[in-house]
Length: 284
Image: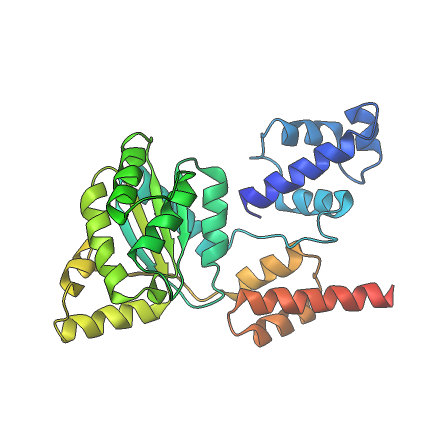
């Protein structure tokens, strides 16, 4: 279970406790949850709180009834480590992985826990100006003016920030002109800001093809990426089991069936788990 999910459960637990005269009285209404455990969660002392306890509390304060519990899969943990490295060392990482492998969840989890982290979710229609509009919006700054003025505004903010990080998601959707623009952004922020780009393996294939054809800018782009792509792993059976259990599906046969049917896609896992929940609600 990631920190973002734990934070959301903490808020619900605090709301639950506020209905009672004291934490002690609230604890008595929760099964297998002590006053001390509630106190530790409220103080953000989470190291000794087990995954099982988080799930137990989530069920009782209403989290599982409407929400999906994100878990700390191998990819999630790898993404946290890579983004921390990029942020703390002002480095650039190019991270690739299949659809539904947890890239978005990893990015959201990191952003929720780190200041001065700016996320851009790319689309096919992006040009240089729209890219800068999205970056400035992520920074909470005005997106008016020319591209040059917007770049200057972003750089001033980066220079004034402590260990800033720009995360550019779904980079494989960008047109060549915007990919070339990333070179400019890299040059202007080098040693001042970390950059992490996320994409499917289509980006690696595209860069490789561009290098083979000696296309303009591709050597420079590949160099800025550190001349390597860091590949995430296809979700394992252990990852799928972790997600199923955290979201209320614990039957080993059903978990195995979900793993065999999901094709390594956590969006598919989520749908199958929700189907199982619906069956359970109907049976009840």
